[in-house]
Image (cartoon, rainbow, N blue to C red; front, side):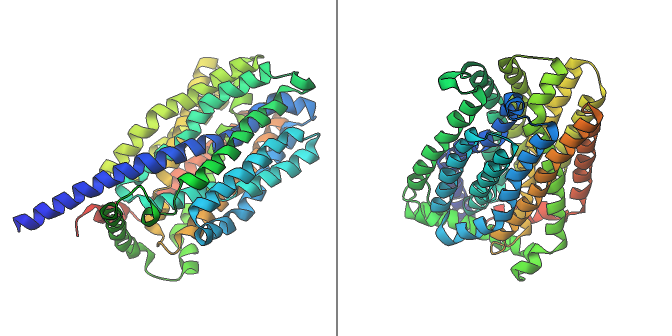
Length: 445
């Protein structure tokens, strides 16, 4: 008996060693890719500080340009994940990076609202499936006891990009203006779009489709990692029920996840696309560099909180309250920005907004993997993400319209706070046995 326990302990220790090796190799590279992905999402918000004037865009028409991006993204998201499973993650992720990098750079050629709409639809189509594809790819490598940390490190690139990208975008707008007779916002898309093409070429040679094809793993390491993942899959099928894929996609739990993600994306989208304009209006700042510097503060605070919170969630194997608390914090933040007058207090509110949704997003993506069977995950994760894109389509229009209608941010930001509270309430309707089922994965077999 003692020898069996000793063997199991050695096996688990070896598995942990392999997981740490894979974590450093895979997640760190994906983290770097996500920096440029999120830069593409937020640079249009900074470009708007100068672009809106040049292209004669109102808050509503600028919001529509963001919506057009998400229309292209949402319609192609599920097909993209299906093609990822057909052609392999390595080739498909590289293809996404190269085509979206080229399309994003092309935004510099917009000459009016209509040309901007067309280009942003193309960018959305090219980028479609990137985030759900990466989240699916992480499930090929990491079990539940590592998943919040792996997801968090991948997604922490978003607030880091918001911090660095905010300052970089402000500097480009200020200092690249006039080069070759072009305004700074056109150079912004050029300098922040082309590096993604280079990364796509690198990804083609660096990534592999899964542990079985990893040349940097030995055969014993591949076996240990695959055994660990197989134990998790046997636990997941308790929820999945072994039914058909379409039944899982229309199950109560998956519909709830889609609704929750819809609400959360309203907050994420507002943070990503409107923070620069809110900072400028709140602080009455005129320097793009200064706006970029201040807009980076909420993102820096998020970077500090995410690793601690997600590691704590993994160790406790608890997800629901680790999701609810940050989402409610974000809702409180939007209320502070909407109704309080002191600039310092409103900046604290913006910090709450960013920290809450970025942390909540990292925890949220641990739910689909234990609810969906491995067979249903490619389509299921993409479907949930695509439903969230409906929020990304609608929220810019809602926020922009309410801002134009009322002349201030109060109504727009109150709307965001309400839907975030809805996300915090809906998460309680998911099965509470999730932590127990995930815990099975860690037990030796």
